[in-house]
Length: 92
Image (cartoon, rainbow, N blue to C red):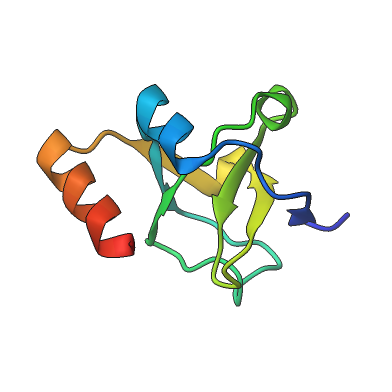
């Protein structure tokens, strides 16, 4: 079984994501994907309800594309608003 699942680009625009709020996770496992996911790195979750039902998380990995990974590869973190804004503005 491949650990990373390539899927079509997320349909959520950045505007929609901002309205929903942002969710961040830290990578704690990278399975067979050490080049795609960096341990201890912060990733922004791209909302994907269908993936969530299958215990998968969609993130933009080191390839620059969004992929699905097992949710147990990550630990959710709640950032203070100022930190979240700074992370998002640095990514742009």
